[in-house]
Structure formats: structure tokens, C-alpha cells
Length: 151
Image 1 (tube, rainbow, N blue to C red):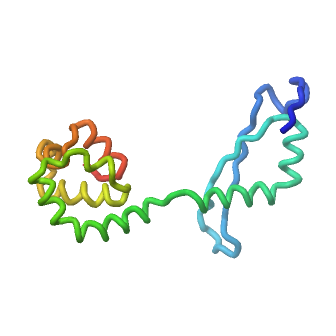
Image 2 (image 1 turned 60 degrees about the vertical axis):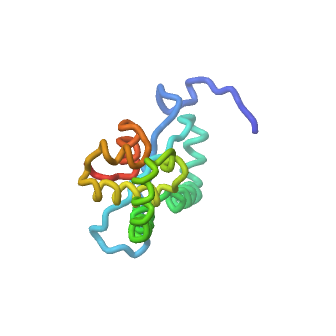
């Protein structure tokens, strides 16, 4: 890795970085299809900006690869539904043992399924849910928020 000292007169403005908007649209997408907007932070020096402009296809390719690696909420929701069908006996066991740290050991989809099941069983009574899961009220609220479970 190399570093070169650059004076401020080589910048495109008074800021060290520039934000560039990248609009992603699938090839052959029908007119009116919404673009997927992404933003890139780029060093504001003229040589960097020229490089990005000359190599925009590669930059967009990197943005697309990053987008493909982003987790989707849909996958968690689908997995949660699969788990939820088979968790009823676990909830009964948890109710008997008062939880004891179970939430910390579960995957996101399993957590969501368990939270949905417990909240449904106890008609969204958070105190009972906390006792069953063995967690504090604050922890329950955080878990509900992280899993996207509506209030």
C-alpha cells in the first residue's frame, strides 16, 4: 500500500471525500422500474475521480457484488416460519424451566420464530414472556426490535 501527500488544490472541492450516487437497474428492465440507489464514498482528489470515471464499470461491479452479499430479511422470515411450526414443545419446556439464557444461543431466524411463538402464546404479555425466556424486559425489547417483530 502506498501513500502520497496531496495538497488541497488538487481536490475537486473543499472536502476530502465525495459521495457518488450509483443507480442500479437490471439490463432489459421495463421502463418505470425503480432504480436501486447506492452511494460510494470516493477520495475527492482529481486523479482519484478520473480513475473512478474511467473504471466505472469495475466500480459498479463491486457495488453489485456487495449488494449480493447483503443479508435479506426475507430469508430470516422464511426460516422463522419453518422453525415456528416445530417449536411448540420447546416453548412448553421453557415455561417449565424459566428459560435460563436460551436466547443468546439461537440464530436470528430461530430467535424470531421463538419470539413470535412466545408472544402469541402469552398474548404479548411481556412480563410472562420475559419469565419464560429467562431474559430482562430490556433484552426482550431489543430482541423484538432486532428480529423485526411488531409491537
